[in-house]
Length: 261
Image (tube, rainbow, N blue to C red; front, side, top):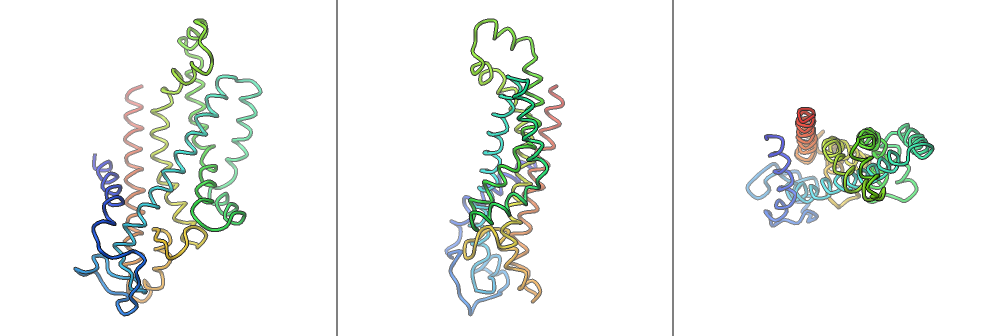
């Protein structure tokens, strides 16, 4: 419940946070640079005088939206491949498995770096690349569950009743994948958030002046060495808390799934 509350609190911060301050996240004031937390600037200001709270709150939207899209795209692709593989079996199953094995050999960050090199910096290329990179991880788990359901007696009964393969897969097999995909999606969210932040941290993802947690940690390194850790501290702390909260939530969901079985 604590981890779930933290997840909801972070999402609420992303939604409501930018409305709580009057400062624009991109508004600069050189004369007010590197100020500590105060009533006017709750998290202080960066070296350009921009309000760190406003930038952290605005960056939360993209920092949470990007891994959400990554998980959604990879989960949809994984479930589709798992259903097709388990239903047809034979050479179809073998071909899909071999393609997944090949994709599994490439690290997720390598996919993102190649996509950035081809399509340029920004948010879209890393999102699509990371979504593709996470498909093998999710598809393997979904395939195991789908094959178990495919061999269940009620699936054979549905086929004998004349139901089409598409109807059986969508109406009966798909719901059985929900528990395992829900748990794995929560785990994948933390990894996707970290990878997306890492891409922005090295300067190949979201570009300045747009706020994003990984990019803020990167830009705050200079101020950190000068004794002003606020710009790197607060978004970095939110990355850690978010990843830990979603991992704890996933662990709890996994235990509930095991108990149900």
